[in-house]
Each structure stands twice: as structure tokens, then as C-alpha cells.
Picture 1 (spheres, one colour):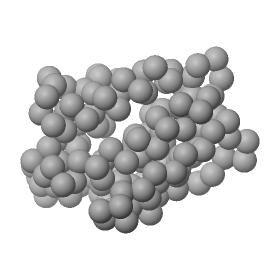
Picture 2 (spheres, helix red, strand yellow; picture 1 turned 60 degrees about the horizontal axis):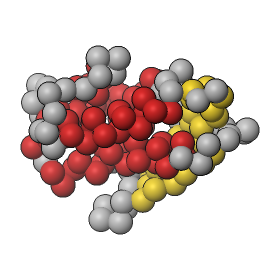
Picture 3 (cartoon, rainbow, N blue to C red; picture 1 turned 90 degrees about the vertical axis):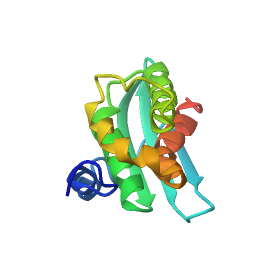
Length: 140
């Protein structure tokens, strides 16, 4: 499969990796968000210290795009500041809407979602884990 297809190998690999899957025993915050149109659901647990994510876990009941996005968060969010992650969500939304020049260079894996830009109905599938993450961070 080529990278121009919606479900290309990088998406499949990220979804199957399930990096960060599970629950945190001592989470500072937990948030669950749903996509009522497709039934996807994401729960994110975070532990934050001094404005930075220390640990993160997620549980996804959703499509491959949703699972891949959550896995990318699980791999990259630890160590990031709350402000950086809130800005990242905005940058990803703009990227999917073709309203930006690109994504932060520290998150190159998000480029795998470029083909999703042509499928507006699938933007929420990618955004749902980021929305859950920010919702959890807003509680910290």
C-alpha cells in the first residue's frame, strides 16, 4: 500500500502497536470522549508533574485511525508540556483541514495521517484521542 491510501502500512503498524494501552493506577486525571456518529470511544489517563506529562495510558474502542492516533500519543506524549499538547491538537486539526503548513517536527509520526485530510468524515477518528488527552489535561 502507498502512503496516499487511507489505511497504509504506517497506520496499520501504529494501530497494532497499541503503545500506551491500558490504565494508570494513580492517574491525576481521566477523560473519556465519544464520537456519536461512529461509536468510537477513547479514555485517556494522565499523570502530570510540573506541567509535563509523566505517564499516559489509553483505552480505545474505535477504528484503526483512532487506534493509531492513540498509539502515537502513547509513544510521544510523556515528557511533553501541557501547553505543547494543547497546541499540538490545534496544529493537527489545522493539518487535517489543510489550513496549516505542517506539524511540529518533534511529532513526525503524525504525517501518516496526511491522507485523512481528503476524508473530512474521518477527521474526528484521528482527533478523538487528542480531544480526550486535552480534556484530561484540563483537569490537572
